Image 1 (cartoon, rainbow, N blue to C red):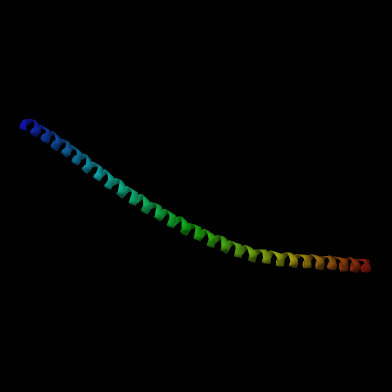
Image 2 (spheres, helix red, strand yellow):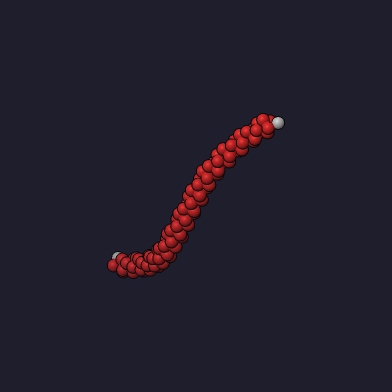
Length: 105
C-alpha cells in the first residue's frame, strides 16, 4: 500500500513539474508579448505624435498660403484696375490722335 502511495506521489510530482514548466513557458511568452505590446504602443504613440505635428505643419502651410493668396488677389485687383485705366487712357489718346490726324489732313 505504501508503495502505491509513493507511486501516486511521484506521479503527482511529475505532473506538478510539467505544470510548473508549462507555467514558466507561458509566463515567458506573456512577458515577450507584453514587451511587444509596449513597443507597439510606444510606436503607435510616436506615430500619432508625428501625424499631429504633420497636421499642424500642414495647417500652418495652408494658413500661410491663404495669406499669400489674399495678397496676390489684392495685387491682381490693383493691376487689373491699372490696366483698365491705361486702356481708357489709350482709347482717349487714340481719339485725340484721330482728331489731330483729321485736322492735319
